[in-house]
Length: 195
Image (cartoon, rainbow, N blue to C red):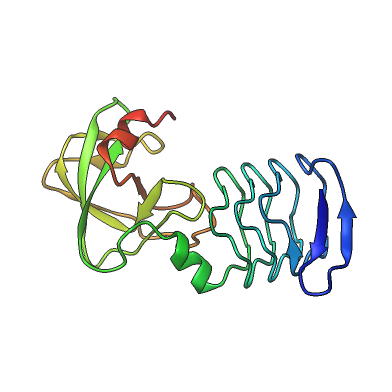
């Protein structure tokens, strides 16, 4: 596979596979990486600004601190990728956002005992989800049905009719598992989720 600068045509690197490649701090600005297989690669602190990553497989890649400003991430697989501290433009975040940004909506969460809890995410709640995977999180939720305890915090109790809140909600869309009330948009996703 050739990695080319899409504007100058210069070849940056020729490789057969980029699976588990170490591209730490690589300058891949404006590189054509469309449909590249970058699974589990280390791209931490790399410059991918303006890169064409259309359809790229970035499953499980380390993208910590990467510059993705202006990168084309349409159809890219970012499941399991570490995007902590990544520079991601609002246009890119909005392209992947799967939770409604205004109004209230219903969501589902699996509790420690396997109970599926139906939640209402109120209009006032901060929420994020979709950039890395299908798991989302919010700063607060009303419990519509289901009682039980959080899988991660035995002191965090869900009780029908009650409201649960997280004071230190993390709004970073590049981190799938961080501070917040985690949920899925469909019941089937919550049921299938394995801790």
